[in-house]
Image 1 (tube, rainbow, N blue to C red):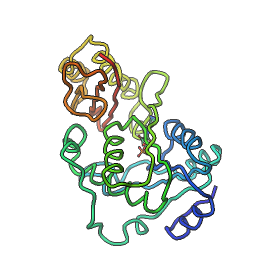
Image 2 (image 1 turned 60 degrees about the horizontal axis):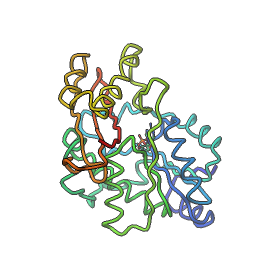
Image 3 (image 1 turned 90 degrees about the vertical axis):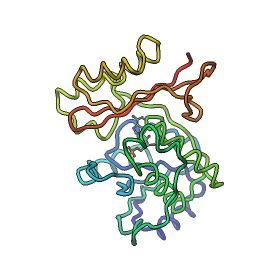
Length: 268
Ligand code: AMP
């Protein structure tokens, strides 16, 4: 695996490699990330992964400074997957000057995650566009774990005519159902035992055993601070209407100091 630290050498390596499939990450890699790498492998002859903790998508008081950085371990995992190129730029490479030109997502990005993380999707869309311009991939793989992010990126690519095929990857879970996340390392042992409840309450909504309001109450009763549990249309996250055949229930909640998100697609 070649590790590229600057844009010029990345572009030279990419030109040599031919069409690439791209998996952007913030590192602290787990099986969820690796499943995207395996999907990428089917999309193009060479796979490029990026590791970059993007300051633009963190709000004031969020975990940018303490976000887990495990570069050596990440490299070993990617080597084992046979990844050809790793783009791991320093902040000064992607943001050599204040980033004044940004991608402003449409109002839908101010709902759900955007309501509780103002500016989050602007930060995501801006860095993804920059990374696409650096890597110039034929395809890019994004996890459904971050369902709304996948929609924002998919819509940006369509509306800005970016020549990148967006490929979704299913959410990879621990044996007890907890969605894998780099942030799971923040959980204490007691919180880790409690954490699978988020998926369980979403599953109750999915199967019609609970309403979103009941799911919120169940989380609260178990000591969580829920931000939202909502049913939306799976295709575009518009408000669900009767007659919609493909839905998704999305939830976000804080357990102690850790904010977890999850979602489940379903047909009513
Ligand atoms: P992150 O490093 O958290 O920015 O995530 C990088 C990519 O991995 C994003 O496309 C995420 O949606 C995806 N991802 C994170 N966790 C999972 C998971 N448990 N299953 C599948 N994809 C995931």
